[in-house]
Length: 347
Image (cartoon, rainbow, N blue to C red; front, top):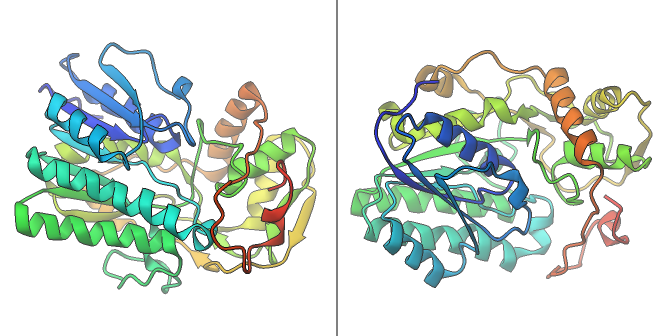
């Protein structure tokens, strides 16, 4: 990975979370000067301070992107060159039942950052969107596919994408948008019972519990190891060809949830105990074309699912199982999956 021989100051929202903590490390690795400043803003709703490395170039601020006064103060104090906006509550299925929370955190919080970036002449705004913007489009999903999101989470992500394009046209704010999908790896919040199926499976295996699968388990996803995703996000401001472009990023090979359960169980040396639950409203097949990303960023060889799961499993065994928490602000209970109404600890 090419290092950067110029000093810079950047903001990473959600930097103590799963993807954010990896992006922070990649940014620090890019800094050849050793004097860059990386400010992490995270409310710790899904992240952990211990995910962050100890580094004098790193400053941690606990707070939310929804706190417009805090956001404006940070921009005024640091004069950021780059903004990496990774913070989000990325629970697609649950987003139907937490619409106000979803739009406040994932859309309004993003607008706070975009406004501040325009006012303070940020050089590049890097945004992690999602392939949720495509909905149930024909696979493989390409950047040229017309977005048609089917849940509030995907709608909020698409709205931010559109707002960034508008801000570029009106104010000249340059951006790079990534649409990652089904990312897993070390630092994932395995205690979250509503999202990140790989983490849910690992957490439950370590607690000697069954693995919940909605529907038949034949729905397919291209599960993407974090090491194949974070480096490109970190490099974006320094890759001129990525300016004002959108990129799918992640693994190429889709697998069924049933096959994923077997792979995770193999990594722990156990036989999977599957608990099939009623199907929920979700996209059946979701995987994307990454040729645009490969052309511009020229990444290395992709980590296989077995290798990536093995790496994450080794980390998970070190940290041990984590307690699940229930989302306390369900706004709509109609059609809420029964398994999400159960007591804490059930996924």
